[in-house]
Amino acid sequence: MKQYQSLVIEDPALQQSISALDEIDPNILKSANNLNRFIESKEATSTAIRHAKKLNQHFQDEYLKFKYQAETGSLVRVKKIKFADFVEIWREKYGSDPEKLSPATYSNYNIVINSRLIPAFGHFWIDEITPLMILSFLKDLEKPGARLTPKMSGTLTERQKEKLMKPLDVGTIGYIYRVLKNILNRAVEWKLLAENPMNGIPKPGEKDPKRKLLEQRENPQFYDEAEAQRVVDALYKESRKWRLLILGSMIGGARRGELNGLEWPYVHFDEGYISIENNIPLSKHGKAVEKGPKSIASYRNIDMPKWYMDELRAYKDEWNHEKEQLEAEGLWQGGDRQYVFHNGTGKPYYYQHPSKWWKRFCERHGIRYIKFHGLRHSSGTLLLEDEDESNFDSILKVIQQRLGHSRFSTTSDVYVHVTKKVKRRAAGKYDKFARGNATIPKGDNGDKLGTQIFGKDHFESSENNLPLQ
Image 1 (cartoon, rainbow, N blue to C red):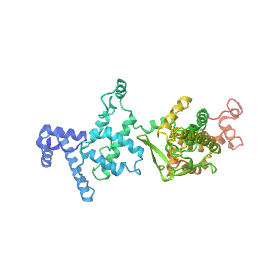
Image 2: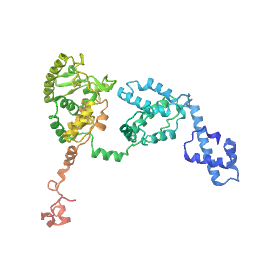
Image 3: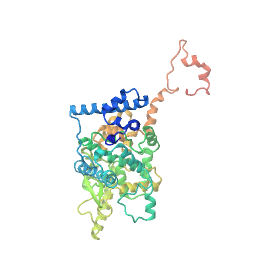
Image 4: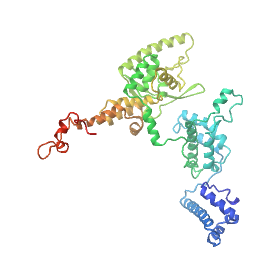
């Protein structure tokens, strides 16, 4: 079967046919003529003929596919390149482009590439990476010890070894899958691959829609009005700085990076709004990575309640006093920058610090935990709760502007959820059909139609005067 070792045939049925024919006579597989002669022979068994026909049909289909691609100019002429070399091209032309990937995402992708993908696939020609190789790679990530990578030092403590021997989380494996698929998609896009070998391989841990919906119902990633009030009450037991930062997201709809990058010149006290002009989505080597907001629509002014702006003004007085003290002690590190929410030295917080503080806050006060980004979801939901359904489109436009979404569909489909209060109000629309409110049609003799069916005693009896089930 040497003639077929260079062919990439992943179909188990075809592989079975090749093995079966090879056992009968290896010469059958040497040429198409031999295969055709075998099919036409009367000496072969029906099972062997079936295997031969299946294999022959596969080669005919592949030939017709090749011919069509050649005639239409869509044939991909693969240039031999190692996966590791292609990754460098991907980095230059795609990954490092902030229009394609945010700096934070690109940094996370590189961690996966260097620790997982290059060790596994770097030495392979990119067109030799097969679905079975990828499936084996993903399966290995589920095994105990998968947290250990080749670059890790051998001088690990017993506690570290014990932790690293645990399997990777499903979410982590799914992220590795996502990075590899992105790279191979670019190889297809740039005509180095005819198709992505990951096509048809499901994302690890991907939940079916029904299970995902159930989880969203059990732990929705937003707060309704009652839960939001509990959050506000608990925040008044914390420092003013953290209270204002959290409310900047839950009421203002600001992203974490936008709050990290907010400076005093963009706080407009007299007009009652804050301007989003900066974003710190990442810290690298201990330094904040600053970039503009996520999209053009993310450059925006967010109107805030008067009570919030009044407290923000009081906080600014505290902020100025703290800055003077730090400068006097030679501890101010912020230079001329004026980050509203700084780390105590004038420099912005490490980009993930607000999320970590928020999680500890929820644990301290016994509040149902949602991700920091869920506070933005809550902002839109709280605006919708007291709105009549007829005003939904107009209020959604307001929410779109406040959250900084480029597309209206993002606001309506992803970020804004229907809360229990809205659902109850919608159900209340049908109160007019309750028996006490409904006009019951009369029969031909003037009696109410219901009495003709149930009899007058049914309606006169207090025990029977219940809503129909």
